Image (tube, rainbow, N blue to C red; front, side, top):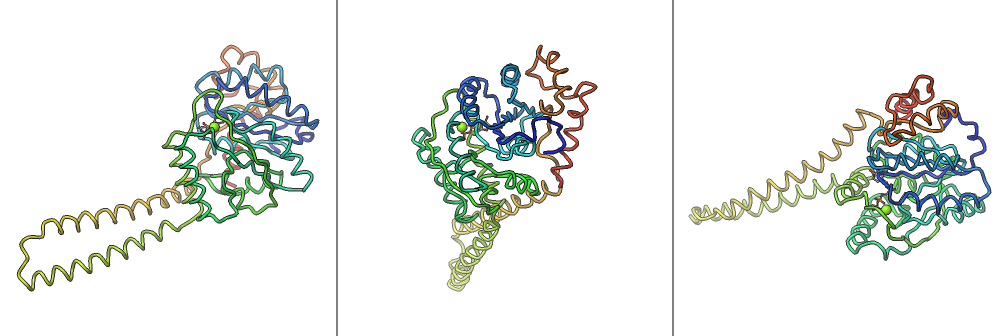
Length: 361
Ligand code: UDP
Ligand code: MG
């Protein structure tokens, strides 16, 4: 929070962190709904748009909106790092005394930010969850998988995880700093945040359909999030391996008795089917167990590598003067975030390095 010089940092009460990946279609609607809400709050705010390596016109549109909206701050990641990593980038660099994270796609209503902030201030809460009271707009499949996901994670990570709480939430500065101090790499914030144990409240809302654009969470990414959620919070699946092994042992014992008695009664020639099933069964059990172990070994590997989960390409708050000097030159092709900052933009140049160090803390 302190390494990026920003004159308005001290006055920022609220930061709104919005990870976005190829959201050109929804961006104008987002700006026109979010801006009046924040203006009406009557407090100093910044909007931290984290461009997660978009390949469409997201960066260009953001740069254009920023010209008329100085509170809009743009952090460009060098490549697509995923929703949770983009969120990490935003939380790590947000200046506000309160930080709200919200999706770019208007499925979470920005109007609820007012309610969240008021609740946090009135009751002195560190966390206010946005709870999806109604997911009628989601597809049946999405609702079913989401229901399954929340049941599973609540069982494994504990009932402090609110059901149907996604990544629309408010955090106090203390909660953000606690999150920043964690060493976790494959972060799943919807589990990490409740685990911190800060006093929390809830704001309920209706999840709206996506007004434009496509979901950036295809089935593969949803499965990845679920696997990260489970392996990040529980070693219980490793116990499944033990149970499977015990079960396989019992089956083998029964088959052994059968084989020996068949041998005693000279019925030993037919048996191809049972032999084959036995071999397949043991093979399957072993593969499942090795796969489960592999997930955990993978996590250890990533933790030992300790690489930053994202790289900052540029941050408009990193030196207002350098930014002003850069803006006209980038206007020609703002969709391409400058990988090498121009000479003079020393704050930008330092950003990836300090980021890497901070991830290691
Ligand atoms: N997102 C991102 N990086 C990614 C994928 C998604 O920053 O690699 C953002 C996306 O732009 C949106 C939010 O994460 O603001 C949630 O994604 P989406 O709405 O597609 O997920 P869904 O609501 O379908 O679960
Ligand atoms: Mg969405």
